[in-house]
Length: 298
Image 1 (cartoon, rainbow, N blue to C red):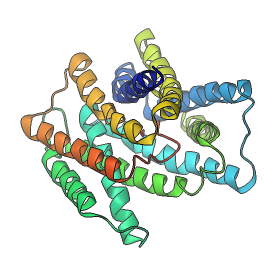
Image 2: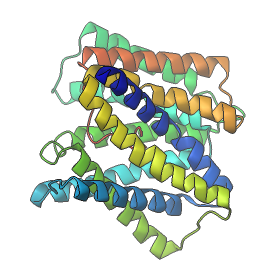
Image 3: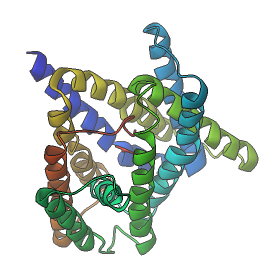
């Protein structure tokens, strides 16, 4: 029963992360701009996770670890989120989510380039599948402009750098405390942006509900259910189930936004997800912390 609950929790986490693009595009349709949307998302989610930390009497990071996490949030995660959410204005939510999932292959290649890892044959096959899938996926069409595709790929590169950096910072703090500091720091960064350039919030109730969904479901619930499921089933099944995130993004985009991937892009997406599964199994299911909020990662 414990493992069944764990699988359901991780599946729920993937579904919540996968709804990021849907909520983002609904908020844009209601008139919100990117800085205001991310300020509202990160600040409210960070405060809620902070309340969870206080309720659990968690230990807050200090010193260099705290400074490192603040920089990760304000610069690293904030930059990735800004690029990702800008991409949503020029390409479908499903396509952007699939392109973000290039990051496992990019992390593997970066580790090789830095001399930190030697790739097995399975990992090289996975990297090849991911790159081949990307070549098929980056096909501009009615739901994708070249700029949106380019930004989607760029978000994967930025997230790769974020992961490699965070793997050296997060450990001493713990995933929940690290996620809280990262989100609050990103919220402060976008808050400064909003103060300088002015806020452009959603103009409709539907838009504000999308912001609430982005903050509560796609960030707070997604993070907490991920950790709860991870404790019950371990890292390997958790990493594999996390591939539900881009799948859910494609499904929600088709159901509620009228988005479609053509056959070529669909095949590319299958290759990318296959690569993610192969890498997850070969790595023993390690997943960088904190999880993106796509994130994933976004």
